[in-house]
Amino acid sequence: MTEAPPYPQKRTCPYEPPAGYREIGERGPVLKVTLFDGREAWMVTGYRESREILTHPNLSSQRTHPGFPIVAPRFRSQIARTLALIAMDPPVHDVYRRYLNPHFSLKSVRRMRPEIERIVAGFVDRIVEHGPPADLVPLLAVPLPSLVICRHLGVPYEDHDFFQDASGKVMLGTEEESATAAQDLFDYIDRLVAEQIKDPSDGLLGTLVRERVVTGDIGHDELVSIALVLLIAAHETTSSSLALGVITLLEHPEQLALLREDPDRLPGAVEELLRYIATTDLVATRVAKGDIEIAGHLIRAGEGVLVSGTLANRDAAVHERADELDVLREDSHHLTFGFGIHQCLGQNLARLELEVAFKELFTRIPGIRLAAPVGELPILGAGTVQRVLQLPVAW
Image (cartoon, rainbow, N blue to C red; front, top):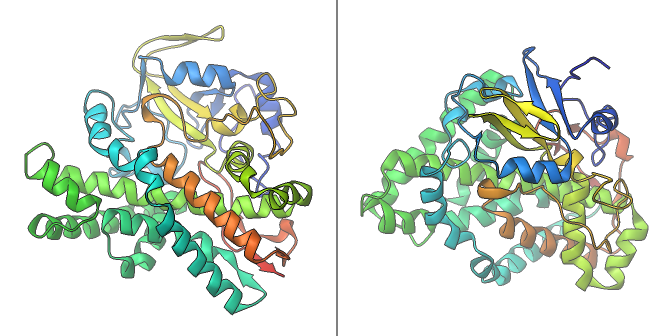
């Protein structure tokens, strides 16, 4: 391996890290990696070190900084580098979070459980009616988070095919595809926000118009940027986590049996799956705005920083049997949703969707199994997000 190993690396198994990550982890908890464009960046792989650096005051999310580490060509577009919340530092970031936090709080999300249970039951009804073999990606994993966030935001669900396709291209397309899709999404939401300002709905966008736009707290373009982030983030990673979680449980039948034995174990199992599969490989891409000393290394101002959730979640210094899936694990704490001020806004909603979906699916279809060998499942597995393109099952 070179002095600064390459990042990203291709995954060959839906739920396991790339083979080269083992050596990267052993060389951590802080090391340099080489990006696609030949530039180097620091990578933090240790769990404790990741939590430490994610709360460091000299770590910045400003993606327009010349030293910011771009991990794939698709993230070079202007829209990708100026996203609300994700590409912001305090104090503006904190103001936006304060506006949004109540709408994604645990209390708020718990009120959504009955509706999410009805939505999931309807999707599983259609899977049963379809009969085996069935592809769970278009029948459950993609439409579930899409419909939930549409209803929460007040976005017309009849447009879901458009923004599901566009969101996928933003996250996993070529540089040209990503930039075009991002602009298409921006234009779509721009029109939607204009309509909301004229006639606010009962959804979150309408609420923000009444509470924040009318009062002058945020402007039209700011609301468009916020909505763009929420729409992409709320369904892209949840969709992948749902599909990957199903695959992982079906490939670990002894663990699935423990959940069938006692469905009350599901919330803990969701945490363990989030730790184990690490759908989002990186939990942070940042740049140092001042020097940072960590784990015996000096990260200088202007140098890029990556935080690997995949490796931090499997840090043997923190987790016993770190590379084993254990739905009864007591040390299932993870960094999949990040840590610090940029911790995922929608984590409570994602947890609930996963828990309800797993319970309904494995209860209603007890004989469910993969209809194709796991090694033959088509996946996109390089970079920040891993996506399962097809998930055929039978029963």
